[in-house]
Image (cartoon, rainbow, N blue to C red; front, side):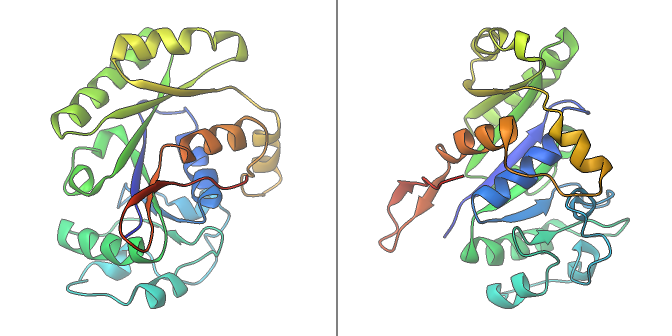
Length: 235
């Protein structure tokens, strides 16, 4: 079984969805929308017009699922995306079935907003949780609430701080305050809005690529014997 990683934006506007997309690409994994009735991660990857299954199509999913067939019918290839793509009623049982199938094929990166991270069944399914945290006082309080709920579920929180390059030294201080493991600081990069404005998906370069590699170092994988190993892949 491959791991399920929750990437949680503790506050809005921190670029967590963009980072989740790049991380899924780096891990050769699948990107999953954790907000089941949102606008959709397929938009982040410019796949909104691509045919394929979305969460509403899986609302009645139950029992064992052919993982290869499911992945094959998702839009995108690197990474394939299970996107929300609008309103729909998808229950926790369908989520469990879909993720059980997807993690047979590859690591799963869930783009999970803080507002829904406690909803069933996300925390029960997670192997790793990474919280993206801003450095303003209110953003740190947002992150503290998320880290606390992760801890209640027995999950260690890994922290990525977000802000200007000059603010990076505050990252370790914030992580210490939250009692979370600090991985890296994600600073602004002019290529990200430029790609977005040109209608291009985010790319694993600059700070995004570096942070994705840092996160990859703490993602456990499973070898043929079922023992954990560390995934170490070139960016």
